[in-house]
Length: 195
Image (tube, rainbow, N blue to C red):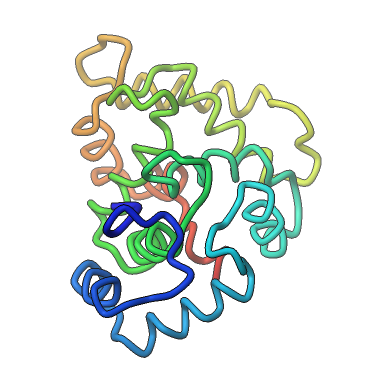
């Protein structure tokens, strides 16, 4: 995903790009073109940088510190890991986080928690992302809190079904689907902040 025909800069949409995006989302051509137009207004080069992403995201976060959380979200949106988010990556991520199925959203969230990309979440990764979420949601959270630490440990123990010290995608998905509160905490709706 991340690029079509080797292009990492979708400054201009062609019919192939449009067909690809229509096939992977429920958006029609007019919606995609409008979203692209708005993306290019904010990102004239056709690429969203980490700093610009944080600036845009902070417009929708009124309290707390969004930087750490944005780093995790950016990494997850940047599917080809080239350091920028192109329009295709942006649109596909927005679609999954706003209109995707519960499984799609949770698969996306799992990738965010799997900081090193090895296919598993370890306790440190769980803690890093939860600290970032707590930092974003709480005005006075300037450094990691003991509440985030305790919550991360509790969630990790609950989700690590076989006790091997790592959470697989299946364990993460099952744990979130069986516990709505856990799902809301671990997979906040990113799209609501970006609309």
